[in-house]
Length: 268
Image 1 (cartoon, rainbow, N blue to C red):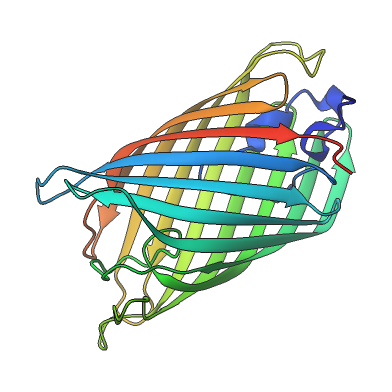
Image 2 (tube, rainbow, N blue to C red):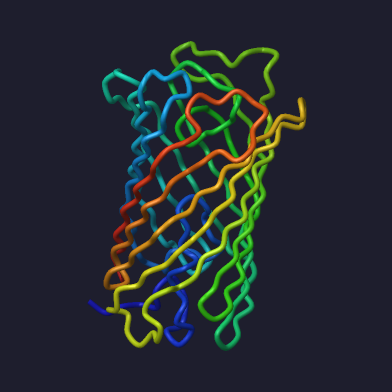
């Protein structure tokens, strides 16, 4: 199999991998005609002391062109001692409309949109269509890559509605939220990037927040991550999510995360 340029970056940059963040989707797309298969598992400790909520999100992504990509997801979860069950599905698309490439650096901006469904009772103020709420989200993301360091920022508007199976959204609760993220990543190994087949080690820190305009409530979480990439195709993320500040009701904000992703290139 021929390797296309990994994540639409040139090899001499030597920093392709550190803009592949755990929660934050960078402005770069999947390479055209590539297929991504991944799963993310999260074990989030319940604040009421009743065990751990486990969430599993398998998804499939397709690079339509160098500017367009899509992903479809399934949301699986078991809360506390409950059995694992399917709770909903999601669809995501992104369009990269600005690329400024230079030697050893680039800057990119993309627009994205997401739809999510859920069939469980609504149990917290935090709005999250990736496994908790039914609704939509749309926003912009920008990524600056210089040498071995990438910085990524995103802002989006999220709107939720009633969940399925008769699980209605509380009438007086905020349905709209502003999501914002700021992420930093750096290639730590190898010191000199010479081949797509080298094992890459990246460290990353993501700040993830939400603001509810109707009430002024908010939260900010931090997510440090250790990332390993093998043969430019297999990506392994090991992360810990921790709440930094919060003024809304959340059931399980802290926990560990593991994400595995494998990319098949040049599929026609």
